[in-house]
Length: 64
Image (tube, rainbow, N blue to C red; front, top):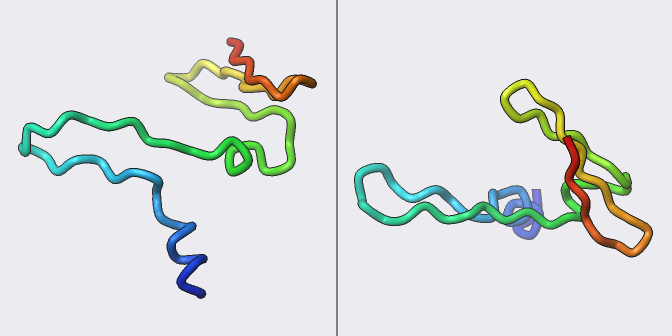
């Protein structure tokens, strides 16, 4: 595996160490990584399915 591929495979942001008192940070994903050539992805949140869609104007819509 190339160095670039290794870097790309890592999560965008690591969670802070437990007990450090550091605030939690948001994890960032690139939309092209989520959609992977699709226009819609499904997110399962506590058993409920949400749909994240890419519109014709390249905007995001999240619906339950």
